[in-house]
Structures are given as structure tokens and as C-alpha cells.
Length: 160
Image (cartoon, rainbow, N blue to C red; front, side, top):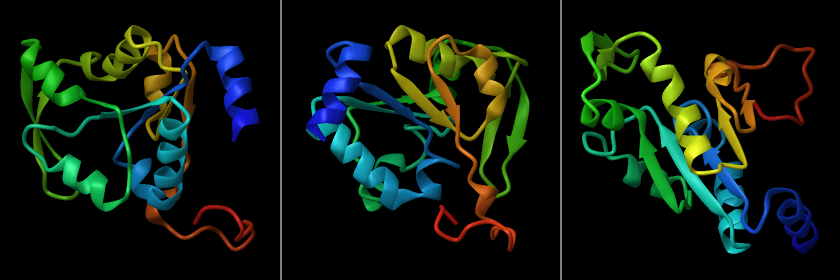
């Protein structure tokens, strides 16, 4: 791990900062992200949970703790847009029944990229590809198969 940390620090400066989306990324592979978040923080880095969920209205902290996830910072796109007075144009209902306010087009998609730039995030992992258009810092899309089983021709040694 020291060799990895040294290489990362040479490239990204004194501290590696990982941004992680919760729904569709962390919750799709919690054991892996429990290990990764712990390793990064134990080696002096930061883990930023950057989610569309509300830290004020949902029990996200408890959800993360149950999965064994460690973090140093957290940020809610939803809470940020509400607090900043972004124009609300209606409601959106998610498949799990959760209802949130819907904001003017474009505002939601750019917030994670803005946050990562402002906080010098070394790499952000997300399951929503459109966000990449708004990132100036490194961004990676995590393909999780949305909980569906892999096709029979796919290797079983990779994530389900």
C-alpha cells in the first residue's frame, strides 16, 4: 500500500481525494468500497461522499455505517440546490417511492463536477455518465449492471 500511496501522492500532490456516489456505486459493491475507503483514509487521503440523496431528510449516515464505509466529507446535491434557491419545477418520484423536488434542467447535472473542482477531488466514481460532461477533474463511470445478473458469456470473477 505504501508504494501505491507514494505513486498517487507524486501525481496528485500531498493527499489523494476520492469522490464516491452512494446510490448505484457504493451500494452496488459495499464490501469493496468499505475496503477502499478505509485504505485511503488510513493512508492520509480523503473520501468525499457526493450524493443526490439528502443528508437532512434521509438516514444516509446510518446507511453508510451499516455498509462499513468510512468518509471524511459528505455533500448532497439535493440539499445544496435547495439551500442555494435553485428554481424548483416540480417533483420526481424514484422507483423506491422516494419523492424529491425537481430542479431546472442542467443545474443538477453540473453540481457534482463543480464540487469536485472546488475541492480538488483526484477521482470521482459515479454511475451516471452524463455527469462526465460537467467534470474538469478525473471522472469514472462505474458499470454496475443495475443489480441484474451478468450475461452467461461474462466472466464470473468480476463484480456481479
